[in-house]
Length: 400
Image (cartoon, rainbow, N blue to C red; front, side, top):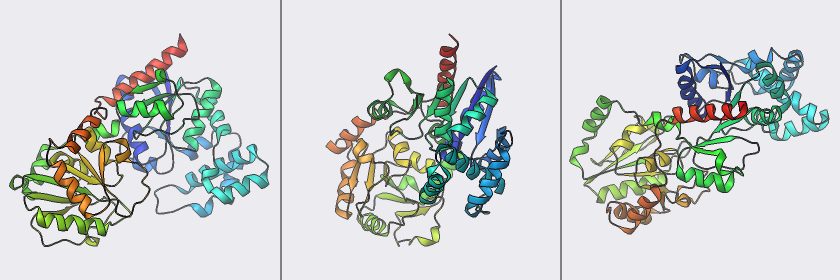
């Protein structure tokens, strides 16, 4: 039986691992240990996933008492009782981080680094070496997260255990360890070749499991939304995906002004799940609606997508939809879809209107340019199975 050690934080990283875990479980050929960090255990509840928490794994270490002592001393104040992270997990996470930091440096410098960077100072390679020696896996699977995920990969390299890393976005920074890298499409592979420092034979186009899951639609839900929005009454549907943390009033005001002119277009303001609809003004326009439904249904119904830097930009490109990035305040965005060639920029109302009108014409130069770049941003199916194949491949290479 092949022994797989998986580790990830919560959020999109845990969602990737959840899908892969279920794929690996189908064949019963794998003994899986999944170290679920921070909020991942709560996020994965009721998913029939046999996971281990950081506090459970810490108890296996000979210096567990020291971990608790250090975690109580330095991590207690950072515990948030409303975060769904257990107190003991918080203590053990900080305890391990501080313990390894002190082993790497003297106590004074370790505490100084912690005071300056908090948990960003952590890279507990020593503890991950000890943990991996306990489990003796054939392969370690990580995502792109820093700290304990990166430490797992570095420790694996030291022990000669192959590492499979799954990128959640198409962009890739320098990878500080040897691994087989799973990327979502051709564009992502070219980017990884340029920036990751990995050789081409170590980069695999597999698709991204979460995006594949996101395109699965309930036909009844889709039809209900279509009818409620009266989509058939309009020539075009344009969806503006708001950015969490930024209410974008200037951008929305511009959108409403344009909607007042383009009466044959339905404009949907799709609010982020963490935003409250009551904080958005609703204009007195029949062709503007504000919705809180799942993003994937409006990706399916739309002709053009407007966003800033959320993952809906990537999903839109993979679904062959043109994207407009609104950035009226000229912020530095974490993901530059315009620079990637899969979106056009709009920095004011005039540019937004011009971009919309250009993209409504599929034969315009702008439409054709975006379509050409989207060909490299293809949607790759069967991502979990493809990653499973990479895992098998690296295990076989070690055993040859």
